Length: 95
Image (cartoon, rainbow, N blue to C red; front, side, top):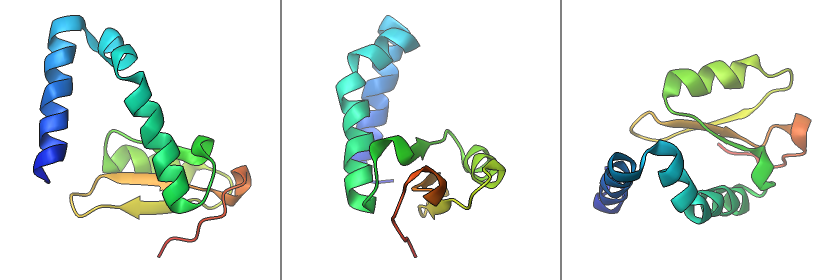
């Protein structure tokens, strides 16, 4: 895992420990929104076509449960995100 990712995760966990999960998410809402916007721009789709999952199992389950095919993107650490389903106006083709 890249060090900046690890540091960001640790910082957020500390924030959750001090403020609680909902307050931490609210405090970081701009960064969370930026994740969706940046990922959508990278993939060439709308930010509301991006779904982030907490685990690979959750992501695959969600991706396989949609009526239209979704695109699955998996990182080396098996964190899976699916995005840009044509059903929802996505246009990205990821290989």
